[in-house]
Image (tube, rainbow over all chains, first blue to last red; front, side, top):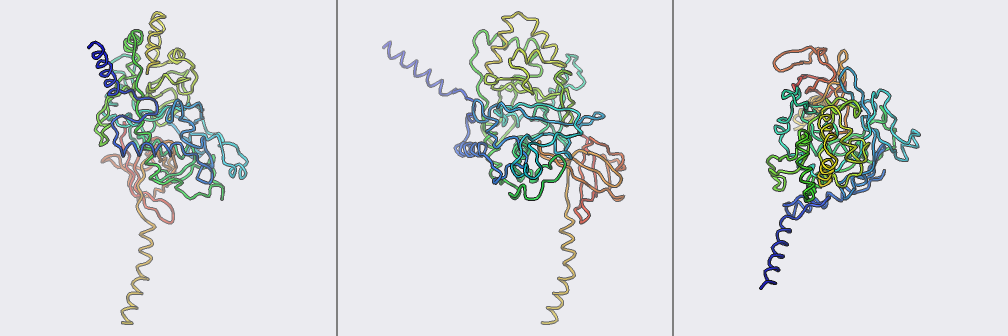
Length: 382
Length: 105
């Protein structure tokens, strides 16, 4: 009898675990339909497809596939690549240097372009006033972030710091004035646009949403260098890639022990949560798995002034020192931190927070060593 | 019958340039940020995500420029302004018919 009770208890626990099965990095969202899971799998194949010059790669590019950079610990995760961006900030207006090849500086060329112009990478724009290094972010949970209602994001904004807490927060805007949410400077309004732009800017793959190649440092592409007709991928492939990224789940945070729970409390108490808003909720969506879902986001998707030491380029309305609050997602697999990867530990990353983050940073420094460890333990659970 | 065929042929010849012109002058609407304003033209930065493009638009005296219900002169536009430009694509390039400055605070 006792054995039967134990068996039942074990079975019940197993069932509960199955019902609340953790989402691992690279897993799709829970609750997708069979058709959506199929699109996730087919989109992953496009995401991992290696492009060559004869299939549209280049003539300028940073990578040969999406998955080459977004790879750790699984497809869609972080990467160790660091790319260069450059813009000009004059009279408080940001110039993305489109006429000099755009703000993403491609670091590779196809053999044909090298032969035609004798260059190994895109020339650095001469009008740039700043250079930025950018690490490869994870794209997990981007489908959820895409659906957070604009009104919810704007509700966190306090551009004039009316509540006098030292934290303002304001939205960035795209070139056509829409609320931005993607990218380190929140310059891109939607996931679909981020993906379409990345195909061109990172791989030189034109697509129906962005059917023309960038120029080469302001000069047209030499004849014959890029013979594949535009667009170089069709809408269906772009849509599948979108669905793969959109359906990537938010990896479940690890179960917290006592130390982690203390760290989570401290995270709120010392003010980290003022910008790294722990939970966001998606708006209505026809996709059940994305429809009105609360998820651990740890971002407000707004720009905050992070002080002069972290400042690099402007972008849209973001000044050089303003950055979007980074979503704290899958931190346990991150090997470096901050937009340029300058911090190799979470402690270093917190210590580098300036501007609106300095009060929380100082409170972190002021607490006892074991409390700091507890907060780090919590962050490492995310 | 021969007369009818001639009339149809003549009509077709007469209508062809109009059809070609209509095709050439198809409307284009751009939303973007003003990059610079020159006499008789402006450059607009448009684009998707990280892939941005510059569009050169001519602004003849007939171009209407507005901010809400207020009329503006094209020279009052400045770099960084977000606008919607309704243009015609002609043999001479894009010509703005109306530019609306948008409030995006």
